[in-house]
Image (tube, rainbow, N blue to C red; front, side):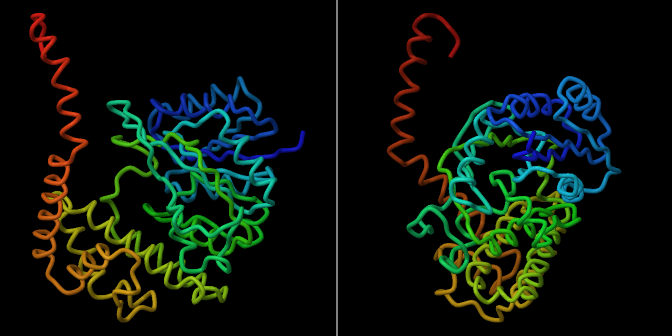
Length: 366
């Protein structure tokens, strides 16, 4: 049977989550899929669980790598892929049962190199589900597909750098020589930005098809405080690659805004006492070197799409790290004040008050 889609599942110490992941992949409504689990040297029972599934479902193969990183695991799966299209789905997430069918049909209908979808964020502790990783549709141009020539200023700002909410044409990825970086963190940024820039036809499904777990102790991508320099390596290598292909200048402004978002987010993730050294290292690098290496010696207000991002960046480039930490604390307090004074918050408090009052009157604990 023709293999329509390859599902690459990088795994590392996810014995508690991989069953639901594989259950939702095996139950996909699309026929003609292959499933490649690439384990990155797990020290728990992840491999045993995956191998049990492989015994029951011939579409599954399990590859055991020595521990390295998720980028290497994804590359191993990419090298083995035989499907016309490919997705990279993490072993700690789970998926709508129609996800592959919807993405594949959209790709075929539009002859697309990439198809993007939305995702739910699922809190691993509470089970609460919210719509997250929603694509920035305000940056889209009219039409069913787009690329860097149609939309150069926003090509990298419509979606995030994660690969798991995207389906890629396997031949396109291999022909362009696009690989995942072998670094501990942000190893998917180079891959995704390169693919988005070089694709001829990109399309979107405005449905949340991925359930991305958050608030986990261990996951493929959970600890953002480790290896703080990886995010800079990812963007600098992408800039070099796109320069080599002669397309960087076309997307330079879009690339800058993607970098500002990622750099500030990485800095935010490290603003705690336990990661203060990483925070200072990242802060100093952004202040003194990061943007010059991307070809931006001076950044003007008109270069940044969101004014609040520009103002935040100025606190880094023009101030000290102590001043920036004070600024961030004030920003958090302002967001808190806006929340508790909002109409939605006040209405929610009134709604919650009534059942508490009833339970109290009935002699039950609140």
